[in-house]
Image 1: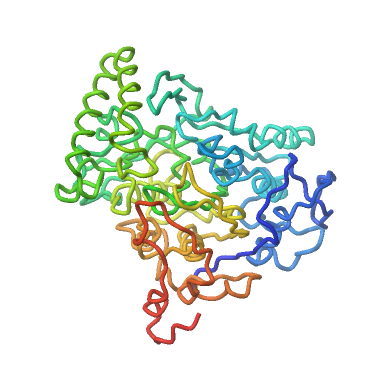
Image 2: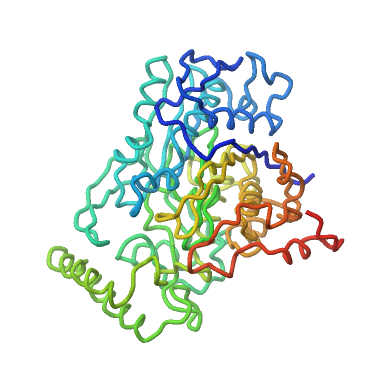
Length: 501
């Protein structure tokens, strides 16, 4: 049978404003007592999508309903993995709402996770935000500290966990200070995918660029047949991972959903290849066609980065001044392609799928199985206010009004990609999620994924959904004209030629 993805739509593209984001209705299964004084259609949507997914169907609308009980039992550990990338939007003080997974979505997911694990279980809300982000700022913006306190006062174990080992202070896009963090108290687990990596056969060895100036680190972990990743031990030991991505466009990947959101379960982002230095003519993907201006910029920036590593004080100040002065000459990130931020990035999707393989096949001791572990990674998408255009950090708001759920991340990503208005065949992370080199993440064809929902235009095989019925999101500027779904795609997707939506 084809994969099924449940979907519901809210009446409004808004979030409740007051933590801890309790429901405004005393649902039969709701056991926390506290009700919100404002309408909470987000909680209602999460509840509805779990029912549409057919979870614990016999007991829906009764006090015994336990939709996540088939995935985790009393005493278990559940990791909630939202997208906590950065606490602010560069252009809009309210824009964090379409950058981060909203606290009201996290609250609803946590309620049903706690219903499954009970007071003897544990919930961990965990992520590795961008290194120059403030975890405290993110927690405060989302009300997660108040949410944690709400649960702990009622005898439940709920923790907030910053998985990073380092936090940076940046000025003008340049790292000026680095602070060590405790990271995951359970430690880290290193994995080597070796010949099971999606980087097998890729020509980038020695030229990968990670999250820091010092590219020697990332290339050390991806050379001579090694493809190594460092993951959170808490994540690897969890009985269930509930992936809570924010629906957004993405400058390197086209779109970010469940599979891309797993970048946040790693403990050191400099083990992750983000792009390959060079251009297609020399088997790189940093830039499509480097002009003389781009080559000059690369030469200058490369020299200044080396200076910043060798002489942190003087070199860093010089790099910051140069970046400030260079923007009028070389262009800013919202209008200029650099660092693999375009549709030809052939690196980041491989890294994303490798992380998914580890979650599906990895053991807590750092070894890999040949068969996937029982269902332990499910996806609940926050698309109530989505972000499009220059995502993931500076998107514009898009009223999506959608919440999606599924137990196969590749299928959820394919369905929501179509609903966003993008063609999965042109989004490498989604397309290749169904075509993995080794250790498959999904079988069959993404076109056969079926939506089961309460919105008439969004039901049935996703390959038949008409582009005009989608959100018609606009991609990042460097992906325009390369990823959008068209009517011709719908006709091509089905051999009967009917093109019937």
